[in-house]
Amino acid sequence: MTFEQIATLAITQKLHLATQDQLNNLKGVHLLHNALYADSLFIQDGVLFVMARTETEKRLLLISATREPGSAFTGQAGSTGGASWKACPLSAENADALRHAFPWTAPRSLHDRRTTFGCGDRLGRATAGHIRALRRYQVAPVLAQQSMRELKLTNRTYRNVIDDTSFLVFQCGYTEGFGADGDHLKTIPDIEAALAAGMTMITLDLSEVMRPQAAAFPDAQIDSEYATLASDVRLTVDTVYADKTVDLGSGEKLTFPRAEARRCAVMYTTALDFAKQVYDFLVTQKGAGHFDLEISIDETTTPTLPSHHLFFIRELIRRQVRIVSMAPRFIGEFQKGIDYIGDIAEFRRQFTTHCRIAKAYGDYKISVHSGSDKFSIFPIVGEVTGGRFHEKTAGTSWLEAVRLAAQEAPGLYRRMHDVALKRLPDALKLYHITPDLTSIPDPRSLPDAALPKLMDLNAARQVLHVTYGFILENQTLKAELFALLHTAEEAHNMLLDRHFTRHLEGLGIPKK
Image (cartoon, rainbow, N blue to C red; front, side, top):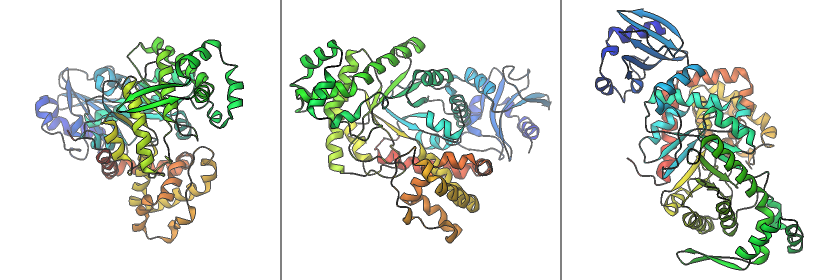
């Protein structure tokens, strides 16, 4: 059907005359007549709003029997059966108009929510599947989440990320609120760009202003470096931290030997000062309490010792920096797309201390980065935090799109797989993974029915996880993949629902 035919169908069936209560009775059915998304049926000021789809695209459909519908929206207009209609493309202009008409389609701060879950969506097509899973649980989703690295590799902007999310939130009729995360930002210009697009959460990545190499410096070198720090910094460290013991409660205490206190100062002072600069900038731009600031100190090869975490948060507080969450670098390996690698008992021990520090110093959330697929430690995260945490996922949603290709379009998958293997050396310059390539069978030697099982194989998952940008560079592959995501949308949403439900269940998040 064309959009004109879809509008005519809706009008002849008098959907435009229905009350909101009557329309609500239709919700829960994902598609009406294979053309209208039932969950997106809303009436406002005599205008019916609904998301509609043809075989090739989606548009926002507006219908009114009393006036020209939606003057703030642009699109193809017409009339039939005594009603006017407008089929609006999913453009930036119409996304703005949608957020104005329905404020719940715009992201907001989630600082008041206990459990939050970040859903990276590299393609702008996964939000409906995310919502299908998350709306059944007591969790607040961060539905729009991208790093600058991901934006560059996918040739998107923060505005694209927000707009794609807003339209899909409307399609799902999800009115409960969601966040938007400018992930792993390192500079004020990048933060400014994220804020301008509507991001409500900023994840400040301090990896380029920390000095993790100082963890291995001998004490003599630490003393030499320490002597170059400002006198007020040295006074604070020597009087507040050196040879002092801090009681975290529950019988646990952390002690700062003088040498280790000085090591913390050498490692983190520049990063702490930059965090203060960024916080003040955010307050100027958004106002105190109107943004969510997460501090990331996890992008290093050295785990964050609990004593270092304690030093860092106390120094943030001394600088009057307020955060919603912090991501330490935990013990073990959090490689992309696979389960946790490391000593689970030692992870529990250190993770418990990290959580006690967070509880004692403002009750901020501990954030688990590269958190997708870490099923062996999910029960620990849920239990030890008492449900107060932020879980961050990204590429695992892309892998479900890859799984869809393997399931529905074997030829497309095989070509994507070939590109992934060829471009893996380039991807390894950007991502740390250690896949055993010899464990991946040649897709050309496998029957079509066996291809989806490759997405259950660690090495294949990792290779496809990190090469997404290089696959999407191929415009033919990209066009075929996006066409598949449209025609097989329901199958894609079911895969995402299943995958994320497994995450939520593993984390012990209660159902509503």
